[in-house]
Image (cartoon, rainbow, N blue to C red; front, side):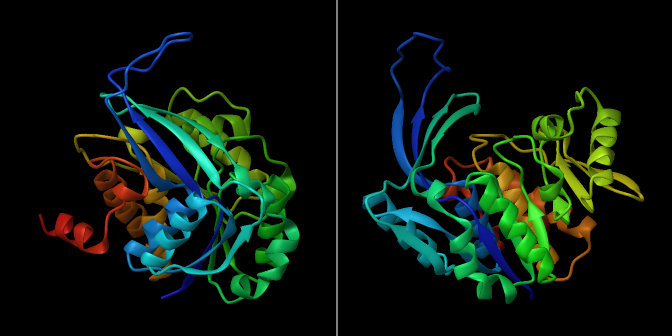
Length: 304
């Protein structure tokens, strides 16, 4: 099995469950409140570890109570935290999440220590990356750090995976160092500058990024499934039908499933199929890391 290193964010998710999303200026009464470990980087790392992956985490936490809790959570899931640093006099990242009874969510991220992760921190942990087979990143740490990490990894021959979330425009020097890009439709539209209204637009936008240097893409389409695109063509994959309770971390768990499958030597088709099962199980539970399934649960789904 190949080793996976995740560089990214670690947040404490402060989750309010409500009947409906508040309008501008409206005050509503929430139904419940929870503190749940999250952050796209940590979510993806935990998803991979629970599915049997060998995972390293690189990132920064604050020297506060949230930081201590988040670090313990990673260790509990047997993730190597050698690359996790504690930033003094800095709060850990938090995400303010509102979840409606229809399972829709809105999220505000306050990065905290995550935005203290610099290029020098990556170089300090370069041996971890060098010994990895896959490097996975998102965009909840400084963009210069993402750019530097991808370049260093490519120079070392490590397979690079980027989840471009939260979405922003990326320059060619980032895109050309990505082996596998995993955006959703909105992120793809922002990255490519092409409006997405149908599958043809997804293919057109993806091809435009391949022309800029991306090797291949998996575009997640929510309940419509996903699509794999490379220079040879494209293939669509169906979503698993489940009753959604909370869509938080669904994309992160999908990516976790894909990465673990690839680390086990599976084909991209097998990896996407596995990731779809993982994502489907995730939305049947509440929260970020609290909703991420274990390998045994996926095996049970296969047998059902």
